[in-house]
Length: 376
Image (cartoon, rainbow, N blue to C red; front, side):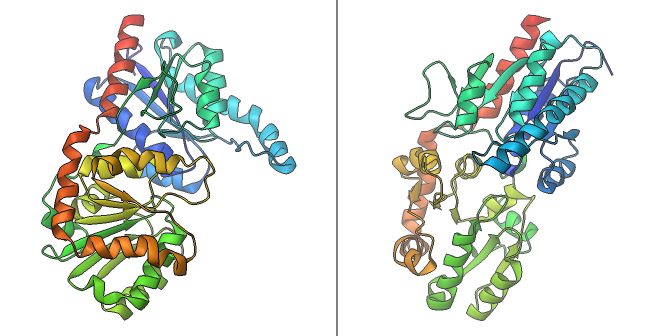
């Protein structure tokens, strides 16, 4: 290892939405500065390790616990805090390997790993950056931002004016680089058939799965001439595969998808949750999308994430009413209308041009590298 190499540690985990943006910034940093040393601090959930191993990214699982305002959960959080800070400090020290911590960065991307990682980094003298991914900042981002050296965020009605504005942070592996036909072929689909991409992000979405099941049972004829690539999350694969087969709709159903560039690149239309990662991927691929915000968030941040796309005409937002029977008249009907209206889908795809590029990873990378150079 070169002692003079810049050091960047990335904290985030619990869902792919916290890890993939960190990977996006890391890959930009390594492209611009191949000698840089990077490490990811993630949670102990198996999904985190699966994602990072698939990307050949060096990582350390931190035994952190989420902060939840319930007695047992608070006790668990307190009991895990010291161990999580110690594990973070050990991983940071190993990554520094003699480098000056004052020229190193810890970048926090969300999730319960970030607070202990930030505590360790501050004690060791690293600069701390917070990359808030949602248009409505959560409590953790706001708290971490108070002592951060730099804060990045998409625009939103409650985002502080001092935070640096960025567009979506999207990794290269989620940006299509091939023709739609080639993307479909790679996914095992018919290269010439119109394709609907259904996704609930890395963990799937139960209510979207159930809505699709109800549509297949009651209005399968609306999907004639289409094929579906459905990323459903764990536990729903066989049930949905059977539903598509009964309906006579060609489909490939997978619990998880590493080839997101192909999934978005194959799509003529998508149905998706609107976490920051999914919105960014739809934006980067210019995919006409029907967004169903997660219905159990009180702050409505997923709707806010997708609002710029809807306002530009590139997307449609519908309320997820949870029960499949209630979703059929709302988002179900909106989906059927989009499936049958090619000119509207083409207009939606064209509307992405007004949004600009999904270049948030470049913005964060440029700032962190520039600050590191100035401090050395």
